[in-house]
Image 1: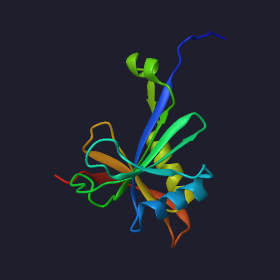
Image 2 (image 1 turned 90 degrees about the horizontal axis):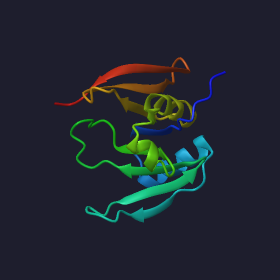
Image 3 (image 1 turned 120 degrees about the horizontal axis):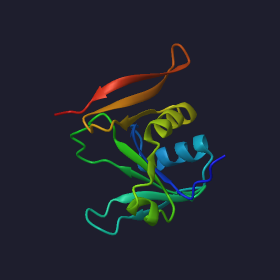
Length: 145
């Protein structure tokens, strides 16, 4: 077995379809993902929107409402997670993108429609629970141009 001294961090950005409030979605994510309660604060910079934050399993997570989201208009929220203290990994380009996995996991555990943007930034993969078949399904999504 070869030993590697490389350390990698991870990040994800998941878009979520949800018609309720930020706090309602936060509660749904807390329950479904079994994470600590989000704390809500206003962003430090403009537009000073309310954002939900938590730290869990070495990740800093952030839930926020997407206002005027012209690129992905069907998705009202984003849920981002980044490994804590990953400055060195970011500088060395040792960050793994786990957005697709996270989007699929959130869709399954929280029964919401999610989407992870593809590397081309013009398309994505949506995950959702089909209530008629009780199966997790996915579909290709194109950005609004």
